[in-house]
Amino acid sequence: MSKESNLLAGLIIGVAAGAVAGLMLAPSSGKETREALKNKTKGLKADLDAKLNALDENVVDDLKEKFSDVKEEASAEYKKVAAKVRKLEQEIEDKIKSLRQQADKLNTENS
Image: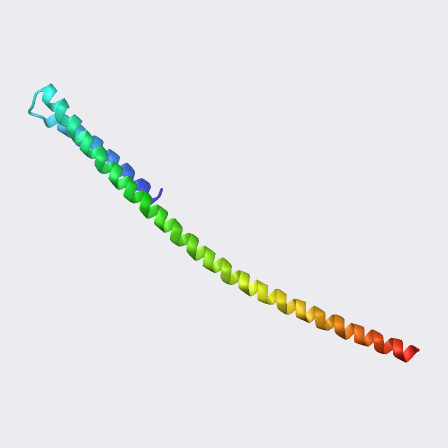
């Protein structure tokens, strides 16, 4: 389970425990207690939404950073592979040229 999931689960459990404790210890009437809980719940929901949005932004920022790192590594590897391919192409062209020269030499000697 990720840190974000643990944080969210802990936050939800804390809110629920606080609500139960508030009901048990409330010196007010049922109507007043319900109104107070309603107002407190709205505030907690707004706070939770704000924290989730911040969490989402952090996750998105982390993903962007990781993507950028992977992109840079892939680009560097591509450049290495492209350089090796160019080197191999040159070696093959040189080998073909050498073989043609040897074939021409053999043809000249046999004529």
